[in-house]
Amino acid sequence: MTEISFVIPGKPMGKQRARTLKTGRSYTPQETVNYETLVKQIYIMQHFARQLEGAIEGEITAYYPIPQSAGKKKREQMLSGQIRPTTKPDWDNIGKIVCDSLNGLAYRDDAQIVECVVKKYYSDMPRVEVKLREAGSNG
Image (cartoon, rainbow, N blue to C red; front, top):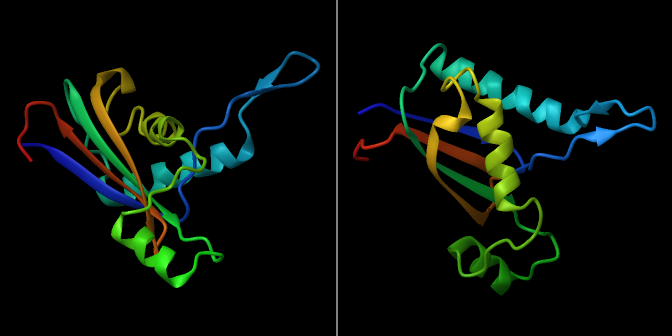
């Protein structure tokens, strides 16, 4: 069973759309480039040249910071999962930025991903937890 897991510290970020200048040239926003670089660096530090083969299943869990405006009761509900984030970034953009970042590192191409679940929760420690495994592996 081949499984890879790692944690990206900090507030979850979603993939931003490419911007187009008046000249017609497109570019990726710097925030997105920086986050993709962070994901790559963390992966390389923890898993170096490990690459999954074949079909891949993924699970991405994003933990958002609790708003300072939340009262004690609401905060407890957020920490217990009774209240979950319905704010941006969207779940699909979180998955996209992580999966695109790992192209050529954790797998040859993100087309190998056949299933991916993205969950959003609140936590005192904002982060994104990533688990990838070769499809058919138990775990």
